[in-house]
Image (cartoon, rainbow, N blue to C red):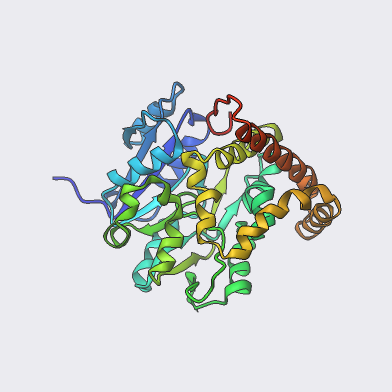
Length: 347
């Protein structure tokens, strides 16, 4: 009889062979008992060596006939048998071999903590520098709306500045958002984040029925009075984009999915805005004027390049204009009901 896993790791894949081995190696190096970990690879029909790699590491492979990331997340959520669930994209590497142990301890030490973030994203040294921008802010629209950094040097510090620190020990910092209307941009289904899956399944039954709610679990947990922890010395290395061109395709997909309210859009900003206060819902309309003012995004570009000591952040101005043009373009297509086929994310 097999041992019931304590931690389920869910990784959606689609032709992810270039980075998947790094990811699974980082899981294999973990100090947490291997017999208490299950790794679920939810695959959308890979034609490269993704499945071969997954089998070599003895992962459980779950077919995802609908291919999409949201559908993969739902399949993983339903199949996971662990008490805790870790979302790990196929291009995210756990740098600290005690990463799972640290998050597990945070949950056990602080019973009100129902979700644990890693220290933040870290960009690989051998990858394109655009990853520094991506790993901090995701995209220029998210930076404009939230100004929340996910970088490992800034994440915990920024949360403390905005919300104060509820508690701290040698392994993690604990935060409470209960008395705040404006919540940070936090997605718990990637990055090596851990959630109390048993609590979510028992207290948030609506998540099981609606796949769009899975990326929004953080906001639902806050409504339940849950706390969030951020581990220390526990970055997740993210191989997000190999080039600026590939990143631009990802931005295009994000805009397209939100304008056309696809499953991924409903699980992204389009779904997240329902938890925002009224002023934030109005703020989104200011992004295009902000971008075309030139002076405001230029100021932010210079500020980011200066404080981060790297020139790649100077692209913020260009990325704002590019994103705004896409917003206008897709909005017009939708408004005039022009025929349009939606591509896979990043294609």
